[in-house]
Image (cartoon, rainbow, N blue to C red):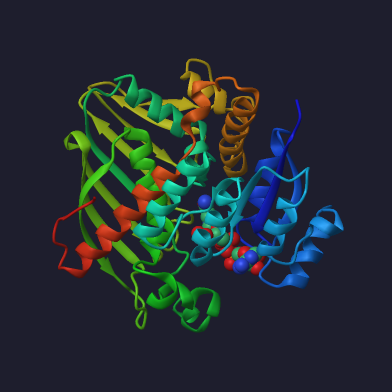
Length: 380
Ligand SMILES: NC(=O)c1ccc[n+]([C@@H]2O[C@H](COP(=O)([O-])OP(=O)(O)OC[C@H]3O[C@@H](n4cnc5c(N)ncnc54)[C@H](O)[C@@H]3O)[C@@H](O)[C@H]2O)c1
């Protein structure tokens, strides 16, 4: 099978997320890394691209040069990942979609609801895939949770409890650190800091696993470190379709919680509990029965979990492999389109631009609610 030409924008040397993308895109051999504009600094971008084995003419210094360069090539890449800082996502994703490239955009997909709506429309019009890297939805046991909810094993879902609370913004000495300071500056970060950055993943997982959208929110945004303009801690009560009760906590102040992404779902006939730091175990408690530990890679899991699981039971399988499941889904869908064939329906589970839009709508409703004394606010 021919490999799909792939490019990366952002994710330069020393960036937080660049390695995870390069590793994940490479795992299944579906993509060939052919082009990149990897850094805000053109010299560093070219240098790093060369060090990763890109050809000199495709180790670009700037994403606009990359767009023009690739458009002009017969063997142009087909698919690009946007892993730059948030404010640039819309402009770059829009430009590549409009020029006929498939796009995987980092979260948050855009800064505003209007931009997010525009990207959904542009993707539809251009008939290109626009996906959003809610990479944690690639974990096998997250897909197991979704499958168990969908098959009715928990009965009607009553409560979804989502948290992304870690200690990553807890050091008050960071007040003067430029890499942290911009995140709490409204002019640069938009309406929200920790909720847009981290809470958005937890909210996406709640929607992904329950298969429901958030309909209304009541949020309290606060900052525990003086001088921050935006929140470093937020607590939200929300409602989802079909009356599901939602709770979400996002915090950068929770020292000791490390990465701190968890999801709990409680239905009429059982509860599920999963934490990203122990991603190989899912705790399932059927009503009036002892808790069972479902192990990733063990037999008896759903087709979706088995498909997403790569390594024998008992071995650690982590975040790059979860991201790799998103890349594999996208690779399968792109290849099927090229062949005029139907993809495996399980490959259609990747997070889409519509999911990206819904998330932005939720966060903006949360910020509005928080600014109005936690008043209940509808999500459009
Ligand atoms: N999905 C996840 O789990 C996850 C985790 C971490 C970060 N992220 C997202 O990834 C994005 C990047 O975050 P990060 O933590 O890696 O940031 P970072 O600051 O560590 O790295 C950003 C990289 O992008 C480069 N860059 C900046 N502007 C550029 C431009 N115009 N063109 C090309 N390169 C440019 C920088 O030089 C740097 O290499 C953010 O949107 C963030 O929200 C997602």
